[in-house]
Structures are given as C-alpha cells and as structure tokens.
Length: 127
Image (cartoon, rainbow, N blue to C red; front, side):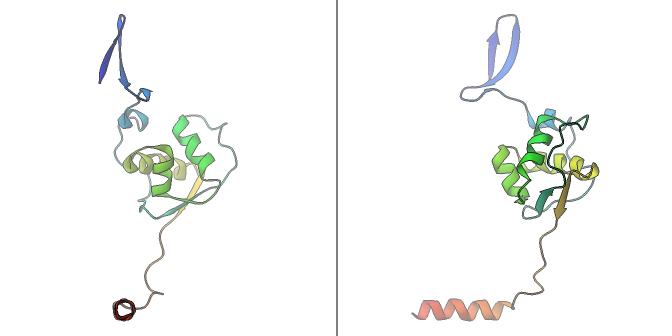
C-alpha cells in the first residue's frame, strides 16, 4: 500500500508502519551464497556478538542473537517474521562468515519402518 508523505512517497503497512521488502533485505538475492537449509535444520550461533562484523544488516544480527539458543530455520523465520527464503539467504551469509553453524536434520535411519507405526495406530484405534 502506498501513502503520500508530503513530497516523498514511502511504502507503509497500516499496522506495522514502514515496510522493508524481502528482496531489499537480501539485496535482490534469491539463493544463499552457501548451503541449502531444510526447514528443520538446526541453527546455532558460534559467537555471542556479531556487532563488529561489517556488511551485516540488522536482520543478520537478529539471527545471531536469536540463535544463541538452538533454533530451527522455520523458528528463525517465524520469530523474525521474515519469509523462509529470505532467512535462507541470510543464513548463507552467516555460514560463509562462520557466525552460525547449521546442522541438517537427522535421517530416518534410526526410526522403525512404517509397519511399526501402522501397528501402533491400529492398536490405538482398537482402544
């Protein structure tokens, strides 16, 4: 939505005020510089503070601060109210600078096969 601001037009949202579009946050990039990040990949910051790093935006710093405690990619996106694609690009920047570590989700190798789950479901239904 566009609002007239005197001689200057600016993008605003009725409830949030000025809005920065996701492509502006990522500087037009749609893909991370490094890595692919699943929604349930776990992100952990490697440092307590990244404020001295040049070239980082406020969203980068917010991710580092948020990930002092392990978070999934989906949780990071939800907490920062950013699209997952945008968060993936920002995470790629942070991984390249070694400010966060991203662990991919574990495979299903340790889980039983589907027949065990079906038996459990059928047993629960029989109750």
